[in-house]
Length: 136
Image (cartoon, rainbow, N blue to C red; front, side):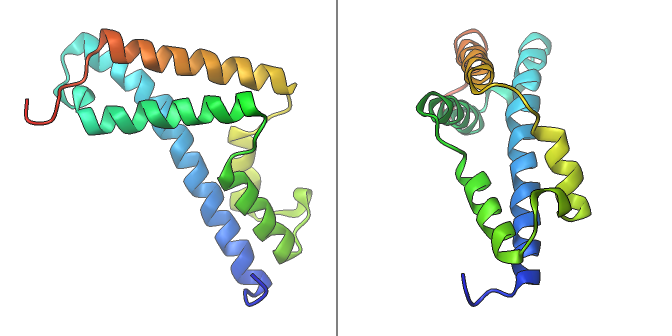
């Protein structure tokens, strides 16, 4: 990482944060879409590959929480920000507002409980809004 300029590191950190927000949106909005789509008969919410990616991602997130591990995206972003010489409170505009949208202060157990509950909801969606097998 020494070959990266601080400006490039800051830009990559912002890109990782943006991707992180996209993943959060995929998991949360995907779960909502599955519930609504199951009730409304939307075929796309039963796509097997999409649903498999959704459930595996949520289970991975919950497992990380149970293990007390940080998300790899968070680790990479923090390392890049450190390389860029950015303090936590002096990030770029994008980093500042996107991070405020998805990170907030709470005890660790609250995140473990929330991730576990959300993972249970996603698994229950798998049962009650069954995905179609490829080719069906």
